[in-house]
Amino acid sequence: MKFLGDYHTHTVASDGQSTLEENVRAAKAAGLEEIVVSDHGFWSILANMTAKKFEREQAFIRGEKDVRVLQGIESNLLNTAGDIDTPDEYIRRLDVLTVGFHRYVKPRFMFSKFIFTNGFCSTRAKRALVSVNTDAYVRALDKYPVDIVAHLNHKAPVNARPIFDKARETGAYVELNAKHLDAFLPLLQDAVESGVNFIVGSDAHKARDIGKFDEIEKFIVDNKIPRERVFGIDGNKPTFKDKTNWRRNV
Ligand SMILES: [Zn+2]
Ligand SMILES: [Zn+2]
Image (cartoon, rainbow, N blue to C red; front, side, top):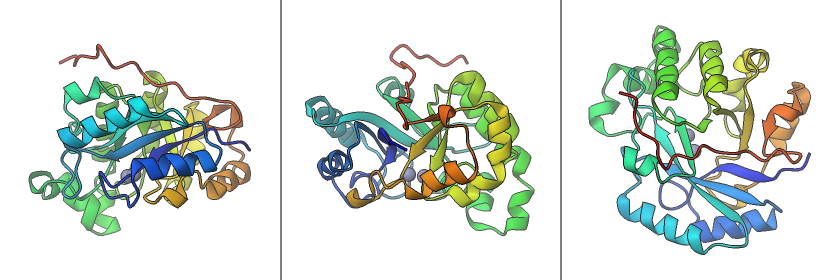
């Protein structure tokens, strides 16, 4: 299996330990053609995205030639209305909009039922939120030009089929995340049946983890995921939405 790119990576701009420069070097050494830099969103509690960091990443990306670097943000899903923490004017400037559930967001969200129960409570308490969580993802996919749904079912449990159907309809990829394959496994059959497309991401927080795809390769093979629907491998280069002129519907 030949991997073309790593579509989920972090740098010191969020909670990663390596610079974008180090990540690019690692990607080149791993034989990758492209990476997405997907640092965490603006309302993360620590190491959040800022205007300054965003401009710095843009400037670096414009100068980079060895490996194609796409600018992404791993946006936080904030509430049951499906809102995310990347302002519209930044969404329009992104190459790749990724959405995922994370619990360490600014206190006004962290202590909401949606974030707190999913992030910090028992499995039983979380199970009561399955349909709410599912709706939150579906609404986010309706509201925003989402390119990648990250590590689904990690922390916030979902009934995945409506999300996969919506992702397929809107052209979003569902991520095979090297760090959270266990959370994704119970959803896999639904994913395959839905016809949704997949994308690969290491979720590297250190340069040395960029392009580490052994677990994903095994997961694809063992579970017989149709390889023509996995993007980032075997010549399947993903394409991402042009968001330049995107406007909210409501
Ligand atoms: Zn994440
Ligand atoms: Zn991540």
